[in-house]
Amino acid sequence: MVERERPAGRLPRALAAAHRDLSRGRTPRRVKESTTVTTPITRDDCAARDAADPLAPFRDEFVLPDGVVYLDGNSLGALPRATPARVAELVEREWGQRLIASWNEAGWWDKPRTLGALLAPLVGAGADEVVVGDGTSANLFKTLVAALRLNPGRRVVVAEAGNFPTDLYIAQGVAELFDGASVRRADVDDAAALAAALEPGDAAVVLLSHVDYRTGVLRDMAAVTELAHAHGALVVWDLCHSVGALPVELSRAGADFAVGCTYKYLNAGPGAPAFTYVARRHHERARQPLSGWHGHARPFDFAGEYEPAAGASRFLSGSQPLVAAAALEASLELWQRVDLDQVRAKSLALTDLFLEVTAAAGLECVTPLEHARRGSQVALRHADGYAMVQALIARGVVGDFRAPDILRFGFAPLYLRHVDVYDAATALVEVVASEEWRDPRFARRAQVT
Ligand SMILES: Cc1ncc(COP(=O)(O)O)c(C=O)c1O
Ligand SMILES: Nc1c(O)cccc1C(=O)C[C@H](N)C(=O)O
Image (cartoon, rainbow, N blue to C red; front, side, top):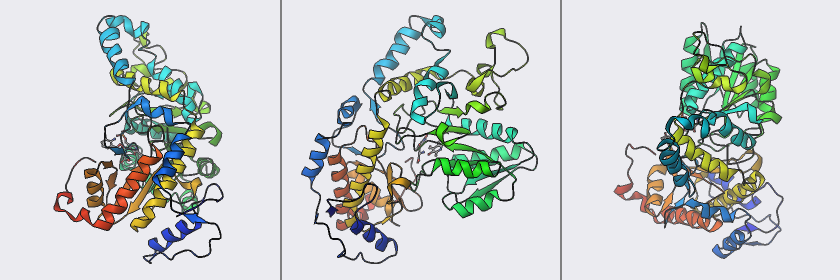
């Protein structure tokens, strides 16, 4: 049921109450206190929303398989139509015909910087503060070590307890390299717990994700950064689940470092190069450990001693996969035409719609209902979530499952329509109501998801 009039930023009270009841294990009450007229949302309503959607034309710029509603763009984004030709151009002309000349002519040498400049507006950074290269894990390593070196005398990495495992693993690996260093896990969504983790005054750096990969919680970047700084710690933000999903304001928030991948909402393809943000105020002093020649001040002097390049370029290490970078370039060119405020508005509309229709399935909602705390995904909890997700995939609705019990659905506003979300949500309600997920075909097995 949808209340036609409601303040922006809130789900209908009826829905919020139903989700609250469900998460406490109670049968949802019918909400009587609502004074506004309620009517169920229909597929036609959704079609009307699509007709008025300013982002609708972007859908045609993506390759999307027939009969599939793709709600996994937060794991691997869809293929932009422009990408194959851009990759072919690099392979056939730049490499095939121009060979070595392309390092200069085609701008290969400068790609980490030119792509960084294209990406910078998407994360609220200056063009000179972002470089593209390597993977998220490698860039986490570089930025964490740089942060520890900038904060001598402090040896604790305060790490978001539930972060994506690679973040925790890299933090552990970094701590092993510094005498007396350790990782202190904290619940970063509990302000008191985070403050307590910082209180001893020994934290060199805080590492956390802007949007939680599992729950979809969106953190207040400015507030967390301010809290960390007040305790003398720097902050490394992982933007994997927020870049391209919502406006990110690194400079405005006073962030120190950030890393992120480009294969999710930015649609650059599997294993695409990642990026690193280094706030301008750290450019002179920041030193990263993978001091390869692409990060040298004068690489073609072939000198025997390392001297870091100026600016964020010092975070580069070695040669980059330029075929993959061509795919990223094609998608970043598309992203130059995108209004991130429109992306955010549509993302919230789509997640609201999904929550509204799936309330009938009776699954506990893990993602915050408040807009200000929600990324671009919906996470629902059920012990048999794996089988439910497989049953949905068999119907052409692709979401994913995150152990131990999370059904996860990502919403990429550039290529998803409201009708797709309506169909997917209806399918989930049917899968749960019919119990078709109990079919042995959907039983849990090990695979990449
Ligand atoms: C928050 C977060 N960080 C890091 C990664 C992955 O890092 P990498 O690209 O190095 O595999 C992911 C997803 O795979 C992620 O969700
Ligand atoms: N990066 C991935 C990969 O190399 C293989 C399989 C999945 C991934 C993912 O990106 C998973 C994703 N970060 C997640 O939030 O679950």
